[in-house]
Image (cartoon, rainbow, N blue to C red; front, side, top):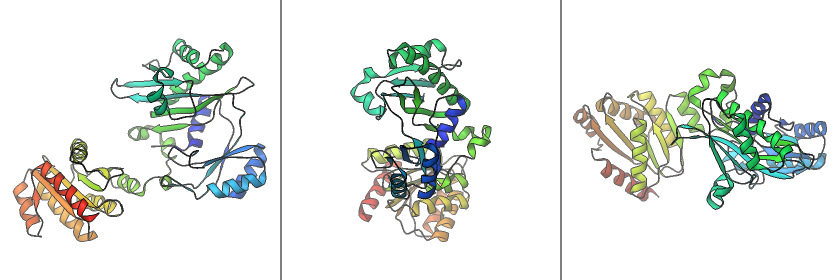
Length: 378
């Protein structure tokens, strides 16, 4: 679950990380009132669940009420990489001396959290890793979190001045506590800035929470902003489906996460691009299948659908009935390629054949077929 910047800053502030004051506004007049209270100049920042706001023109400085009104009015309603801006954060402008980077992610290979810091903040850390890997320090965390001596080592990597190191080290330790205490999969400050007066401030906050742990954090679950999420992902969550939208043209409906990953890999291998990850699980419930097909039917980029089912505990004939029921309900017009294999496979083929549909058994053949159908529909 992604948090907005202002929500991430609330978590940082509660943990003791120094964060500038700020309030959100949903219209230009609210923005001006907040800016008047905070004092000019202020920064007007689009609140969307995606990066690249500054490059898209979603972060602007306002030096007076008219500036604040104009910039807030312009940014509100802006589309940033497919995300509509519904609110802006108003925060005082900071006199920046230096921009740093600090972030904690899950290192899946090492199966442990990883602290990354760089003196080159304010830019994509991926770009720094690609062009100047020596400018990134990586430290794995353990059950202790980030001990003081390791926090000090990271602070020395970021800034040579002892006085600044003494301010940075506790911020890094507090960031590690936020990551652990809130069951995050990402906690990032970019930029972490120093000021000419010797302060160290978190000017941005990016926090991603592990959805699987939200039952332990009902307060954090309330921070979810469905209006800022992909509608398909919202519906999938409500229907008990696992769905992630991608940027391809081939819709995938698969039972089982492992098979879904293999399906996407095979589509890429044969030259196609998957439009989504969609796992309906072991269920043959027509309601779930209908919801899955509805989600794909609404995605304008999808040109063909691969329905890939391996019948283990799940019976293929039950899944076939669910698919036919779903198609009757929604009147799907997209080309569909079906691959069924496993328990009660013959019964499933007979059911589909009675409706003029053919099911393949070979996965490579099915993938090549759906890629061809998508190309015909282009």
